[in-house]
Length: 103
Image: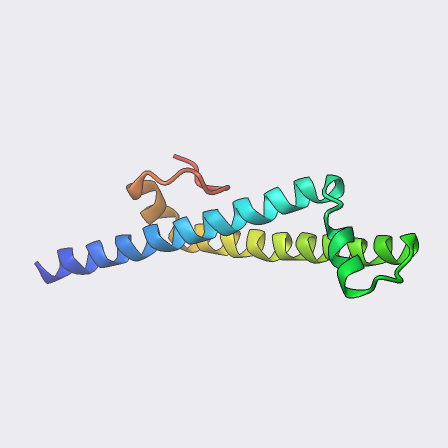
């Protein structure tokens, strides 16, 4: 019984972590995809520096997009490590929404 409970605990942990990672991955993918079209960031720059010119808006926006891309790369690596370490559990749970989980 203890062994079965331990397995259930492991599966529950893997399922919870998979969901968190999937949410983070979706968030950063959406940010990177929509960032080039979302110039609302210009308003945020303007609010912090009303004298900023177009080049300053572009520079700060490029930094913002680069940060989102770096975050996406980090979470992608974390997902890859997680899938590699927990592939059997993910398959057992039927979790196939993370990249790299093959049934």
